[in-house]
Length: 534
Image 1 (cartoon, rainbow, N blue to C red):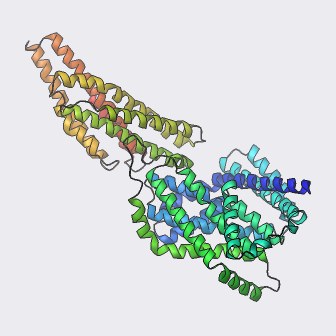
Image 2 (image 1 turned 45 degrees about the vertical axis):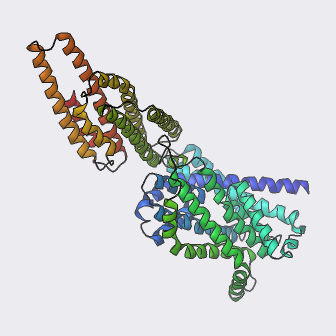
């Protein structure tokens, strides 16, 4: 008996490991292609639902899709409204995996192909040179482990668990169903993979261990348990991520409560359909059909509520101080291109805060120590995510963008270190930064990358004004109205100010370019501007 129990635990481990490898492999092989369509094909609700369903089936993980969608929302690529329907679709996609288990995993001796699949997958994983081929190999290994675990799990159920009187829970009526929902939720929270729980329940109902109503309650609980991942992942996340996670939780709660309320009539309807179509109704297929139907019903219920719900959520989670990240969190790291975009957005905000400090000096005010501390806090957070992103496998284009990002963050660090020197200049001369005042105000209020061209033009005009002031200083020294010592000191101050403006402008224009929406020629134009400034 104990050997069979241990075999069941090992089988469960194979299923979880297989799901992990399968998800990672499919994400590597097909994920980038799928995610390119995320912005293009989710503008309408029905497109979002279809995309969420297809993408979840493709990468075999609703969690992967949810985290990626949160990253796109953070980066401003996807609105909360459009993301909502992608999340609804991901739940429907999860239910389709149950069909795969019921129709293929349990109806055919697919476990006989498990070892060959693992062998072929290992060869591709170890010896293929292209990342997509390696991803396919990893997915094949995952498939093999998943079905191998499923076969062992069915054997352990047949040997050990078939005599357990789960039917006693069914005799408790409504409270038995509630206990089943709670157990399913607990399993999903512990395993952090609702698909694995559903495979477990379908196997159990197929082996005759679980009565169908109780198995349905477990599936409802597994759906509810997926919200734990969303909640945990947003504990230290941005406001946008928290809003989307809350929407995911609301969807699953409404869907789960509805499924509990109509459980008996829905199972009765499914039974009638199965009796009409099959001589010998299959409980595994009944459960898969139940899972799909109540998720589709959840989408139908949420469809008219989503707009008002989004308006409600957009007013929540707004209490953020200056030093907190606004668009960057762990979800952004799911796709390097999205991570670079969100890192550039946060870095631009650092540049605008530094510009705001310079603007205070031009208005005759002192530097704000609290804001200085917030800037340091933001820089530390950004550097943390930079290190995390640097550990991820990056394409050549992404590696170059990351290098450009680091270079411009160093430029911002230089400007931050120059602020105390500028503060000393302001103490000596209250009018020292009059020419810069309008330009710094523009940097503070700019919307990136739309205002990049206007900022570039203003910078050129500022440099012309500064050149005229330098020429006037040369003339004053030549006519001996200003001593050489005083003139040299003023030139040094001009040089410090020029370096501040140059590095700040170059960094902010380059970071705007990294967002991927600015002009292709921006980087080159920025370099020309810097040469002119020199």
